[in-house]
Amino acid sequence: MNLIGFFNGKYLPVKKIKISIFDLGLLRSYAVFDFIRTYNQKPFLLDDHLKRFFNSARALSLKSPYNFEEIKRIINKLIETNKNKAKEFNLRIVLTGGESENSTEPGKPNFLIIVTPLKNLNQSIYKKGIKLITKIYERPFPQVKSTLYGPLIKFLIEAKKKKAFEVLLLDRNKMVLECTTSNFFIVKKNKVYTPPLKNVLGGITQKFIFKLMKENKIPFEEKEIKYEELKIIDECFITATNKEIIPVVKIDNFKIGSGKPGKITLNLINLFKQFVENY
Image 1 (cartoon, rainbow, N blue to C red):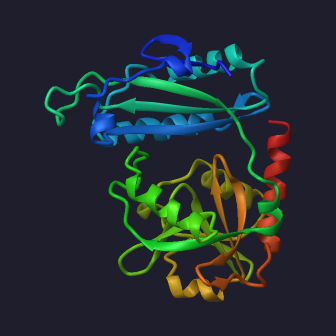
Image 2 (tube, rainbow, N blue to C red):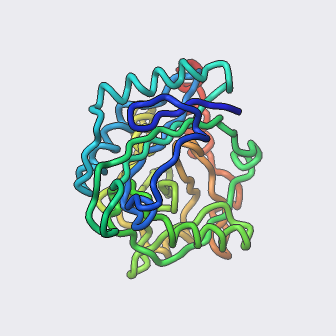
C-alpha cells in the first residue's frame, strides 16, 4: 500500500522516507515521538498528543521545525491524502537529533510523520483478558516519549515466549510503574487506582479514561501500588492509543480476581466504545 507520509517539508510515499545513518536518532536513540490513531478518519485527541510531543522535545532540548498548528494542518492533510487507502490510520510523529559530525552533538533535526493502516487487535483479548509478566526497570526520563526502547523490546520478546501480552515494569523497590507501551490500572473494592503520574509517562488514553470515570462517577485515585498488592486486587487493565482498554487476568503466575475481566473494566470498555463510535 503506497501511503503518503511527511518528511522535512515534503509529502512523499512512506517507503521513500530515508534518514542519514549518522542521525542521532539511529546512533544514540536521541529522538522523541508520539503516536496517534484515527476514528472515523479523524485524529483522536490530537491536541493532547501534540502537547505531549512538544513537552518531550523540550525535555531533550530538541526544537521542532513546525509549530503546533502547522503540525495539525500537516496531519489533517495526510489523512485527507490517504483517505481512500485504508479505513483508519496510525500516525507516528518523529523528531530526531539530526545528523551529527561526532556522533554526540545534535545537528539539524529531522521531522517526519509515518502513516500506516490501522490494524485492529484480536477482539478476543477484550473478552478473555491478557497476561502480563513483570520486570524491574526504571526508564530514564520516564515522562519523555523517546525512542529509547532497547530494554523494553527485549522484555517484550521474553513476554511473547511466556505467552504474555505485555510487560509490567517495577521500580527497584518493587513498586508498580507502567507497562512497556501502556499505562496500568487496578481496581480494589470498586475504586480504580493508577501509579503516580510523576513516575511514569502520562498516557493520552489514560487521561481520557480519567475523564470518563469522572463523568460516570467511578471513583479513582493516583497512588503507589506494591507488587505484592497485585495478588489481592479485584481486577486490572491497561490502556494505550493502539490498545484502548484491555483487561488483565493474570500477572506472572497468579490470576487477578476471578481470573476473568471485571465489571468496572468491562463498563469502561463499553463507555469508551460508545464515545469513539461517533467521534
